[in-house]
Length: 576
Ligand code: CTP
Ligand code: MG
Image 1 (cartoon, rainbow, N blue to C red):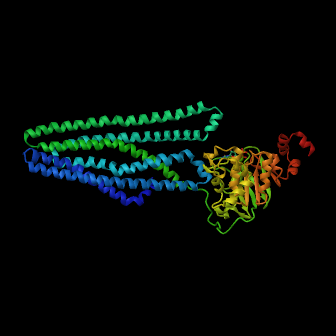
Image 2: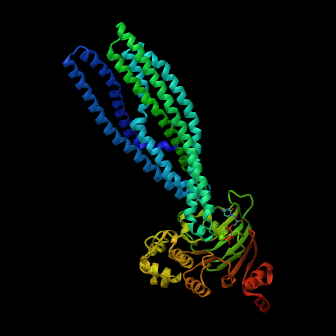
Image 3: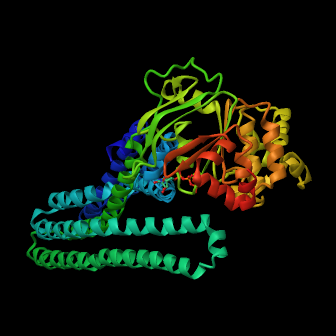
């Protein structure tokens, strides 16, 4: 909470000005009934036209003052609330950019989306309404009661009974509503989550014909949201008639007692008009409380959710002794007894890995699905940190490099290629700032995608839809390879990135990148790809089974023989 509202600091002055102007409006609102009473008593009752004109002019003047204050107040209130929202969005965005993979696992995308849309707006609205009218309500209720006492203490006594009664009742409503709003907020989250997963997986859902199932999932979440919201709002709305009933009773009481006092000559008519007027204003103000309660409890929840992200500790940073001068020159990678657990998991994913990849070497990593191949890759650019052991790059621990230096030396092509919406050329040059046209074309040629691009309607300017919807799987893979190649990385890491390519294209690709490359790490399911590498690492359930050339593995490993047999047939084994 505190973290979030510290973003108000730059807008303190604006908020104070808005608050002061609101006080002007408030003062006018409280003075008007008083002057109205005076006008009736001194002017209307005595038929004194001058008096009526005088009080009337004062009231018009005050109303105009209040009108001007209202406009300027509104100006500052929106300046403060929009500025606050802008700053906090900016900060959230930067914070999320810093998130490590482990941080991201804790905050699913749907939840982060809700922060930017729903939660920031909620706080922004409350700040605006707060500076505009919300803070005024309790002051009007209080001021109204005080002014009623100034006008006529004997009649105002009635307020002392009704107002505490109403406030007590409202506090009870507040407590109940706060829990209910928590539930509403969770339902909103749920709808967002299902919605997001659906949008992301629309194609899959269609392919699997899971429309009805997903439809039900959405209906459940949506109905839940409706029911929770409806119940909460009904509860709060139900409190309104009770409020008004009590307030009307007190107005009747004022008229009743006032009447007898006027007859007895102890009270003037103007006093009664003024006090009834105050009673109505107090009632209005108190009835706004339920609206304020809603806004405040929702805002509280939103602010807490935002702070959670803002205070989340980034668990993967440059280490303190990282040397900013130190660069990756050769591209030698060494694992020393490396073990790794995902933060959420109990079982280790990788256990005691020890191996070295020499500069310029091509190492293939092969292993069953779930063996830990992708996890192994992610440790090298420090997307996750090792749990145990050490990874060396050019004989120095990877933690001794700046994260930026380390990652810039690595061209990482993830398992599922992700493209951004925009022209193809931007997707490739994304890998390197200020890439020249020649560099882009060369990278595309090496990735074996240049010819395909030239056949597209707008060639390099062809627009890629969101996540590359208008490209084939293999085209996406090759564009994301081009994106990695353009950096001229010391180490290129391909995570099953040639899976959608035919053998000939794949061979041409690997051949083309040969010259530029220092070191190549390639995860693959295909023996044909693996056997072209200098050595093959066979990973099984997070452990290195063996490491060596294709021939060596054929000799040494049963599992490898089985994999080869499944892909090449029994005869191949007999021949070799
Ligand atoms: N895993 C996990 N948390 C993650 C990612 C993976 O607990 N954020 C677990 C998976 O359940 C799996 C193991 O880590 O059992 C290894 O995952 P991974 O390294 O992705 O396996 P790969 O060998 O890359 O499998 P595939 O060939 O299917 O890509
Ligand atoms: Mg994988």
